[in-house]
Image (cartoon, rainbow, N blue to C red; front, side):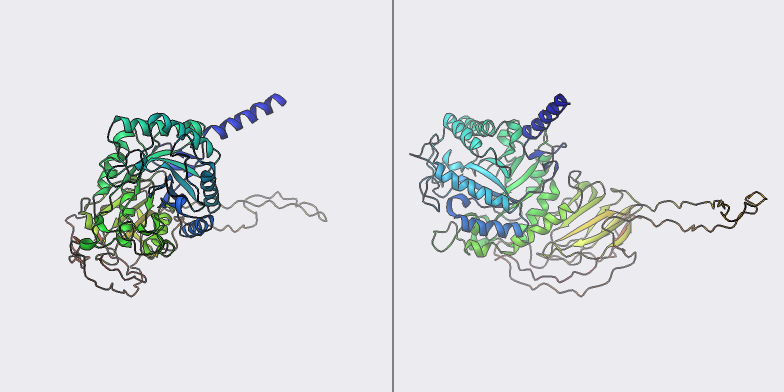
Length: 561
């Protein structure tokens, strides 16, 4: 018995210590935490450790946790003169700018903020350094302090320093693309050092944060054992075909999960040209979130121009921030990201795939893009201007399906409607126009269970204790009648089906969006071209037109400045 107990304890200890909390799913498409699907809804707080006190960090974590975020991306050696300007406690990260001489007081502050984040249910995606400490380039502050040897030393040190943290994911890079073999060697050395210091490759989850490029981190490190998932940056311009980059990388072997780790920030100068293009809006932010996710990304990172730099009136702003960071935390886009998370977590996550082949309108321009993704018993379709679309049915089980609309601006859902799960069906979102994006959810309705008939059974009559048993044996012919309820069994419905009507849903009054001028170079018109009527034929005898319900509490949407 003692020997068996020892073996059990050994196996349990080995299984819990060999693998970290975060892992890549078995199909190599998603991230799991303790074996369960983990949805990455990130925020870029690059200057968190460098500029915030414990009190300010707690304020920030509490707000982002309440807004549904799950991951905070932050940097140990920060971008904005992080090596030579002290943190909120007056400490520098290194002694004599030497990566082999980390300042424990500085990293104790980092440690405390990671712990506070964990108390709010947040995971830190930690960059050991910003990229300008490897390649200063034309805009970085630097200085360049790394070579392969000291990068490996620092990696082992910081990996071991935070080995016990359970709310930690590691990100190499930092807004730099390696330019030569020497820089690639430095990043490899840093990653391998972190892995060794933290207890081995099975104890860490790791990626690389690049500048905009065709394949993201995969361009240099896709075959590297330490790279667990790929990361993109999309470049802060409007209506880029980033979904095509994700689709290309999605099919690249060996398969690895994909995320956009730095999308277009909210309140950011569009393409760094606010004068001509204005600043980004919540609508710009939503489009990248849904298009990226439906193209195959396992999660999404939000960003705000005022928040990443923790801007306030005491600091010099980078590229024209408009709001102090505490106020910017409540910009509309930040509060709308939770609706994307709620949608993705409402269905099975690990079987979801991108699938444009089920759309007839599968190749629209970026400003009018329609993107589809599906799981074993559901389909999501995002229409970024509320444009009608045709869908090839029969992709999910059941003779009939139920569909409803989700408003990405408010999270509100329409009532459900049943539809035949055959042929080609046409779906028309509740409203159409610039800023009027919609998600259609199609889900299986299980077929009714067959009726089970129950034959009446004879009832045995036992003799009374006071009287003798009857002399004549009891037979089916003289047995008393027994009534049996032969009502058919009720059919099963989908878990989310709530008495869905089979007729046209109730109409809610529409509130039309307020028109506003577009930016000088805005490619999407303030009023989109008139869509075909709901009853327009689609050239297929099996096609059916589905009339949409009207929106609920439609918010006003303005075109970008």
